[in-house]
Image 1: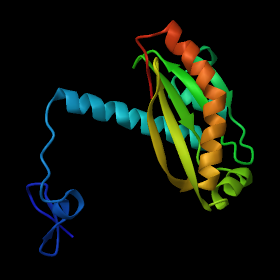
Image 2 (image 1 turned 180 degrees about the vertical axis):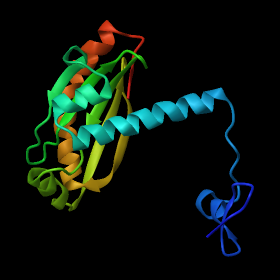
Image 3 (image 1 turned 120 degrees about the vertical axis):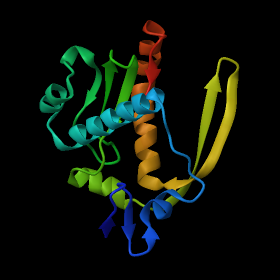
Amino acid sequence: MVHCNLGVTFQGNLHVAGVYAGSNCIELKGPEVMEELIVLRRLIDLCFLFSKKSFPVFLELAGFSQVDVLIEEPKAGILKPAHTILRDECTKSFLVLIRGTHSMKDTLTAVTGAVVPFHHSVLDEGGISKLVLGYAHCGMVAAARWIARGITPCLLQAITQCPEYQIK
């Protein structure tokens, strides 16, 4: 791999950025792009901390306190991943964090990998506005439905109390 003085990386005669980004990409510029990238990086960092640290250590390192926790489910069960909902005043958001494979119970969720049909209804004030049909990983469908049943009432109440907040 050769590093040119322009900061462009080449491998042999092949421009690496073209391989990863494609030929029809545009350069993203401006403060809005940087702000969004900073927010996305913070969300990635939160997911990493949530998956690698105990819950109290996660809160401390992430800059949250117990007051910011709407739901705390730090222990996984079979087809029931650990998750939490946090109130993030910095971004005016409710953050839903779901931990990935971390324990033997998470592994059992992951190995139930048969493909199953699923449906998802998108509701608005007038009823069902959209129906999504598809196929997905059996364990993930079960886990997603379990999480949705548990967090939906909490999120609805939170959005009612703080309508200016987003769910992320």
